[in-house]
Length: 243
Image 1 (spheres, rainbow, N blue to C red):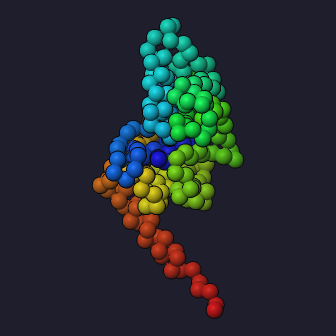
Image 2: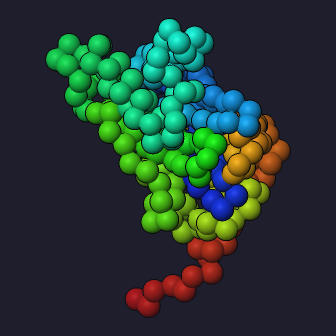
Image 3: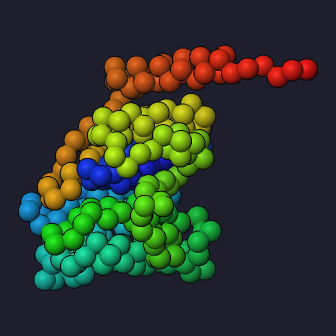
């Protein structure tokens, strides 16, 4: 399993993903689940994947292959005119890949399933963020749903719901995501460090902050221990029930 979050704020887009994959408690590996495509001054696209590792790697490999010689390997997400068309192409590639591997054809509950978050900006339009389902369809983030989660979503969701603000700074957004990931890591062994972080400033058309956060990262350790102490303090400050 995995945990990935893509979020919209006023400054742009922020992405975070873990790197753990496992097929049982004795078969745990680390794989990067975040992939970025960019053309300076023209477009910036980041994908995060969750689900069957063979499926997600096949999708990324197909997308990368189609960018190397667009005239021979169309359609390419590096030539799509809008982020909507980028999401559509990725959805079609995901559906196609699942259908190729599943004996009974493409099904949402097949062991070959996967979900993808894709966000970015193409010159002439605003930054956009989408979540793509195994069936190939997708939804777009908006004011009512400014972030998407895939993978082990339930443990990290409460902090996002309570603390997200559209106007927050990069620093606050990173802190929010780290708390969300720390809560998930504490509750589920299928999610683990290192974490990959990527920010994108609107209209920059190039990567912003790029960082891999490892287990002994001093800031992550501060956030993890500080959040635990803050929760304990908040709990202790609540009034007791009258019995």
